Length: 357
Image (cartoon, rainbow, N blue to C red):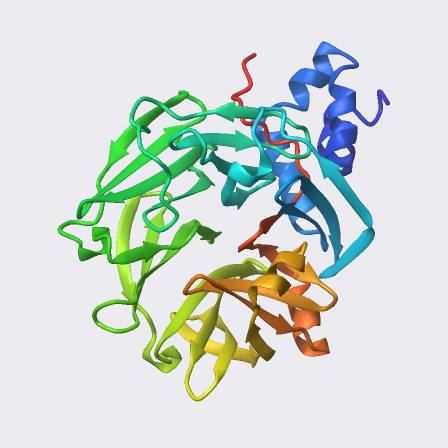
């Protein structure tokens, strides 16, 4: 051990251990607790975990919260286990806004807009709402995401659109405080006619799909947030993907931005596109896209099940597709995905709290 050096042990061995094993080592000594709680270790451990084909699927059931293993894109049913949220909230009131580096940004919809950072692996959570959040969470006009800035400070972005006014605020884990930042100037996207999607993080940018189904018909916009400059911009929805009416849903696969486009031409269609060199390239079409009726939706327990994927919510309906071998092999590399009833996450040691020496 003396020849290897403890720094090498921490950097090259402990960073490869499961998150729960790392947590157990923290209680052995003050030295381990300090070294295994640093930003550098958190980042290295989460990067290694993110490169694995093993992910976790957290599903919000009406009466419980269930976690399953996703290995190579396949749901391992025999690994299913029920977990509890330490904070006393019924699962039916929980809403997952974003998943990032093992943390979930969740909202308790029962008590106004109560935002929390939660690591479902370690069970640690932190309330981050302040007095500004004196309104109920609106699934169409409230959204947010998470990211690390250039100083490795964990940040939470929250967007609220109300009465034609958009407000953007950023929370700092290091400072444990919120601040207001500039939003889109004179943007019609703050109107109640527009619906904002959950955030998708990819390549130092957070992406939102902002849709208007009223006027003009089927209008969609892509709003981007640069995490370094903390600035917003608007991109038009690519014309080649236009099928009216349609809806886009972002996801990250192998650290590349993709979008699922679900729409109606003669019949329901679902296609996967990839962003390459500022252009959208079609990857494949999903098999047998169909809208689940109420009874089938109540029977579904996961967003991934029996080689079927519950990929998006469109006009209040849930759309399910069959996964052929091509789609299944490609989607096993999904980095993160928020579905109608759950989200993918990786097991990491990232804490909702800033570590104090």
